[in-house]
Length: 188
Ligand SMILES: Cc1cc2nc3c(=O)[nH]c(=O)nc-3n(C[C@H](O)[C@H](O)[C@H](O)COP(=O)(O)O)c2cc1C
Image (cartoon, helix red, strand yellow):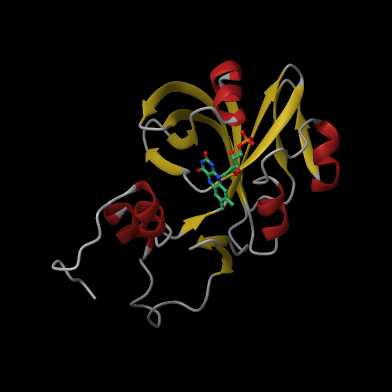
């Protein structure tokens, strides 16, 4: 497919189309502002450093979550499982309700004054913002991971070109499609 002669000029619109090919996990970020939670779906969560353990997440300038993180400097990352595309959609809708009532049916684990955890998350991390960096039309928040947990048996939700997906079969049969524990330490 790689063609240079017909390359498309990288307008913001064309770039969004290209970026849609970057498959992401789907997380719900939760912050507390004035005692009430705000939950937002995010695909931009990445592990930024192993030691110290740091996560990065980016939110558009002017979004409610960017303002909430600048203010509260604390958030949880809740990685969604493959069955929870309804939650992913709900917490992505502009103008969605916020506050405790909006999270009532999510099996929320309250940890006041720390932000809550979605009981259905397949992995979660509780983070303190250590840095907020303006990047183009987004803000990048670096969070130091304080506490975490995960369910190693659960399957993740994936997002690709505007659609939610469950992961299909492995790209190659085991063992070629799998890293051993010692390879993992060396590779990534
Ligand atoms: C799968 C998915 C991933 C998303 N990831 C991000 C993200 O990483 N950063 C972001 O700013 N918005 C992201 N959004 C959009 C937000 O969920 C939400 O629509 C936006 O923050 C609404 O802003 P508001 O709370 O100010 O209304 C994503 C939406 C979807 C459906």
